[in-house]
Amino acid sequence: MVLACTPKSQINKKFPYEKLQLEKDATPYQDMIYNSPRILLRAEITESKTLWLSTRRMIEHLIDCQQDYIIDGVHLMPVLVNQLKGTRYWKQIRSVYLVKTDLDEIKDGFSRSESRHDWLSSALKDKDLVDKTARMVQTKSVYIADQAEKNGFTVVDTGKDFEQKLNALSRKF
Image (tube, rainbow, N blue to C red; front, side, top):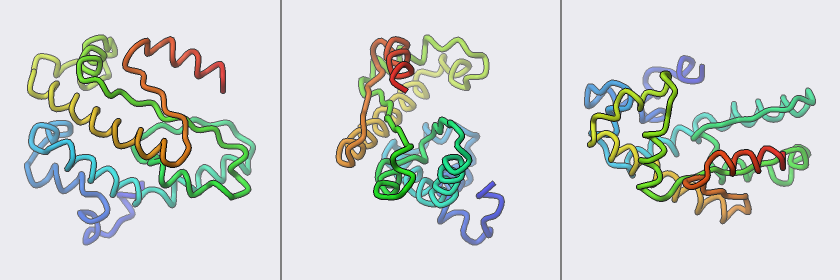
């Protein structure tokens, strides 16, 4: 929705992922083959900043309406969520960052996906795509874990015992 409301002249600046795909004429997820994990991470950081104002307002609105919610996505960078500390909303926010940092565990997790809606399931035969996607997940996870710890958030590496860790977290929340 935010992308659709962004003037065309600002799309490449505010949504660099769009430019990465257009420049290389890549379909979604092929961008991982053509670009380094660091380039993709920088694009996601920029997009998270672009989306933050609307995401923050949505969080505040859901709290004002006394609704429970779970927000999942790369746009919730710890440094941005940290801006809510000190506001009247902070006491009602519980946050945890899930990461995966071990390349072998990341790839193993890809191969265990059974969802026919998971784009990677159909791409598992392309070793290069799997390797580069795993490196992208690792790069992003290391960055998010570092930023989350610097900002005082809980970080859980779900590379091993994924379901058990999710079950334990769901009991906490």
